[in-house]
Image (cartoon, rainbow, N blue to C red; front, side, top):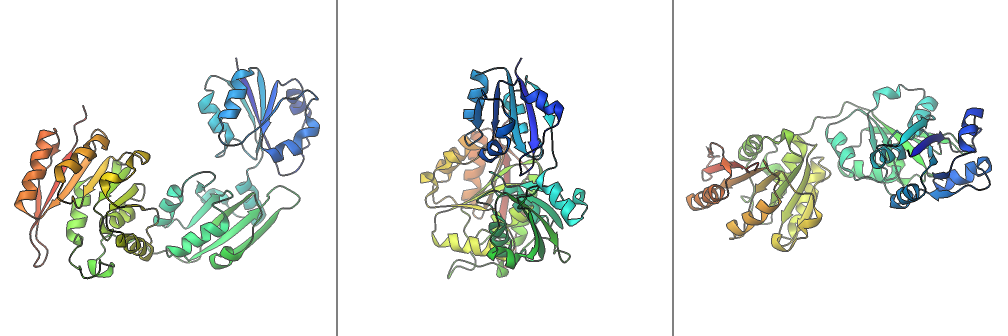
Amino acid sequence: MQKITLIGIYDHPPEFSDRLKEIIAPADGFAGGKRHHDMVRRELPDYARWVDIVAPLSGLFDAIRENPGHWVVFASGDPLFFGIGNTLKKDFPDAEMSVFPAFNALQLLGHSLGINYGEYPVVSLTGRPWHAFDEALIQRKPRMGVLTDRNKTPAAIAERMLCFGYSGYLMHVGERMGGEQEQVASVTLQEAVERKVEAPNCLFLEATRNPDMPRKGIPEEELEHLAGRPRMITKMPVRLTTLSLMSLHDKTVFWDIGACTGSISLETRLAWPHLKVTAFEKREESEGIIRRNAEKFGAPGIELVTGDYFLAEKDQLEPPDAVFLGGYGGAMEQLLDDVHTRLAKSGVLAFNAVSGESRERFVQWCRSNHYQLRDPVRLMVDDHNPISILVAVKSSF
């Protein structure tokens, strides 16, 4: 049976216990980061086979499979705290695994600051996208622990927060925690943008004032519009009713096709921040409009795809389980056929029909493709034309 021992260390040469020395001495292979190798080299046997842990991790996995036996893997802090241990457990589920953790970097930073770090929900940005961090921001989390990497640095995090209006936070930054060069500083976000921070690092965010709750229901006059086309926007009552009827609480990926000014994408992101939102819009000028609207109302994380929908590289995107059809450029059935191939089973599809013709075309397509139509809702806002809100669910078979 494959055996893997995970050992957590700090940012300095370790003093291993007799027990750990007995585990290390007869091991068949060793792995860790390059700086880990420098720190533990003197504790390894002369014959030691070492593998650097670098992306992609397939190199490590192949080495373990090709050289079965007992492997010792070194990691910073706790290997199971957003660490290599979790990945190894997934790829080697039958391995006999032992863990000897040290305090992780956020715990060490909490100790240094003298805070109850258990009250800080943790988000990892180490090799990960912004989504979970953006979700926590939109939810107005008053405290947050953040694991960084060489791209999503404290400066990049602070810049993103300021860009989307989340200025009311203090940032506690820890550099090289657990090592001789450990540094801890508490700075404003403005100061963090300009501050040079050594890697590896981590941080805590702490709200300096009660954050405002996200807007839900944004009047169209507060949004930036297409030049000369102020009426070309989904009206707030229609927007909120449509999204409510889509039952988005259990969905994961939302596509807004024909996003225009981004009102649907924006409203979705603020009300259901767990959703990954992609906005498709053919007009190039909409890119700046959607970005500025998102920044104004604190809605980071909307992915924008500009240009012809049919020419877009959609295969690289996560397939949706919720789609709002805001425009179809005269090719409704062709567009719906494409969406149908990508929409998950039991996924939801919504369309706001202005004319009787567009309503019947959508309804007929849904019936021909075995979508279950929910009871339609008809709304009229001010002096605008009545809108038919149509929602359909894709067959689960």
